[in-house]
Image (cartoon, rainbow, N blue to C red):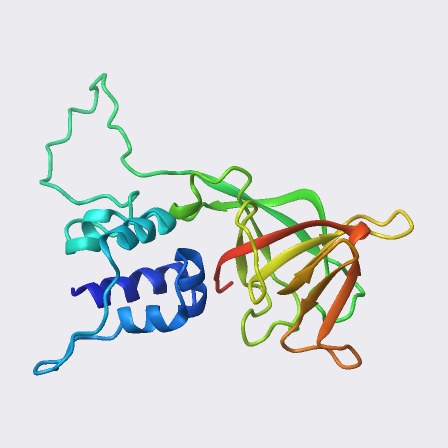
Length: 240
């Protein structure tokens, strides 16, 4: 597997677009596109490739092994297990257990659909855990990482109802990033969450966009700053 193929495979494993992948490692979508461009026989000019320092950044950000990214050696991710020679099993009454070599770290899934709401993806997000799921390798060291199930069709085609979204609570967000926001409820109602695209946030308001607004709603949503509890980056998604 060539370097362009390894970068493309790592991005696919992370479930990110070229633009999102580039944002995570501090480069433009054009740079990622060039990195993933295969080298053709007889090509006069070789497509640009990331520097060694940039490869270190990519490996650290996505939990990949630097040796794999640099040369294709070994498994892609730090938590993968390389199959070795088959070792004989101890007798049934052996006193020493066989250690497990893979991680079982999980993260909580929070929230549930808010019945009776419009099809805008609004759901109750009050810290109530509804399940546990396996943690993506790149989030294993992130304190407070969690997941939610997406509801509604307001973010089609980006996210579908039932998609599992993993959340990085400390990753800085910028315009164009996809985020999960927690909004303070009104009249004693519990806090609720929205999955949208981030536009801006200042002392006055939070501005978000939805890709597929429900009938009667605008594409742009605005919330008073005093009602905004959290704005967390969506790290990845998997189909439910």
